[in-house]
Image (spheres, rainbow, N blue to C red):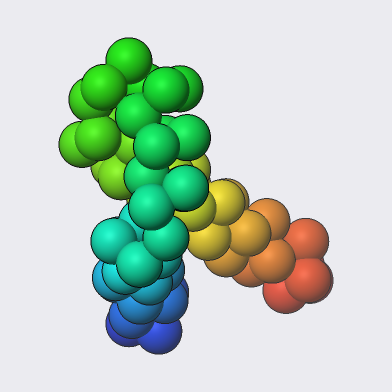
Amino acid sequence: MKWTDLFNIALFAVLWVALIQKKSGIKEWLLNITNDQLLIGIIVPVIIYAALVITGRIVKNKYLNAD
């Protein structure tokens, strides 16, 4: 994993939290989905995004750099 991957994950997390704070409709929707546990609504999408970034890096290294 490169430092740019970590930067992208951190940027996604900051933008996700900013979006939740900016738009009250998203915050209410997220609270309805997570049974009023906002922290889960923040952490789970960031973990999913990080898993996708890491998986993409592994797949890219495995299949595009194959000899």
